[in-house]
Length: 445
Image (cartoon, rainbow, N blue to C red; front, top):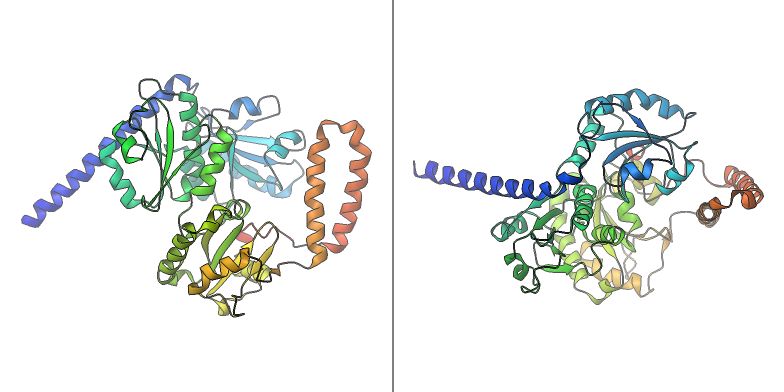
């Protein structure tokens, strides 16, 4: 009876805690009700977006968009599924399609590199869906983005979040005079980055200012603080909260945990936003035994002077799941696991040996990082020289194409000659199965 009473009390306390934060969150979201124009996807049908209405429709509302081309076979195969997605998400998520042959500028701005590409788009933020084409997985992905994505709290709730979550973003605002535009940017960011494992919190409780190590007298200014690693470190967002682009860059840089699993959804973002990625290629079943060592190394790195100059993230990949990827990129087989590799995504260099010319051991991680950045370690390259050169040329050509897109008449001849030359060289030199090393998808399992 005694234990039953204790358990009942704990359950009631947890229920009260959840109900309390839910009520605060509902009150917070009511700030945006005035600007909410209509129910999303009211008819359960696809909306075809064009250059004339794309920006207007996606600025404030969340859309799940299929970027396609009429001649694309894979797009035609996905079309019935996409119609079903629109039907099932009636009243929940706007579903759109963009024909990239007729609306090329949109697809260029959204960095569409193949067809079909599926992206969640809201404001200046977009997130590509890279999972399977099964309708259940597509629906789950979309629904997760349409959810609240953040929690409103008061001072009494924060310890619970800090205890349960490694990283917590906390946005303080003045309840008497809220900046709805800035808060909407934060809400959009929370939705876009909620899959990282970080928690996005918002508060108008003035008692939180002291907890966040902020000036308790300045109650009128909105502020954003990251409570990192269960609040062992606080990081303030120092730029303007009205700058949506800078806000998202900062969140991308700081949102991942000390030791993050790389998967199909986050691979490109992690690789594209860090100077160096520490990767443990590990059998997923043994990850628990590896986690403490990697987290210790990550904490040591974060406290070092070098961390102020270089963005480094500590990650792991299930080598038994992504066998084709580790074989194709790093020439590793499952029998070679576990293995630690440092990769520089921008230069396609990697390091798999420590200073003593032996395989990197978990105890050598920090010493090896120092050696990488002081230049005393010789890198290996993922591709042969000519392939690396041509891929750099490809990037430059794409950048050039974007630059001259506003002057098509003047640049037509140059573009045609450059394009034909590149295509001819690419056919005979660049490997036909080339894909970015920063991208992991189902084809590489």
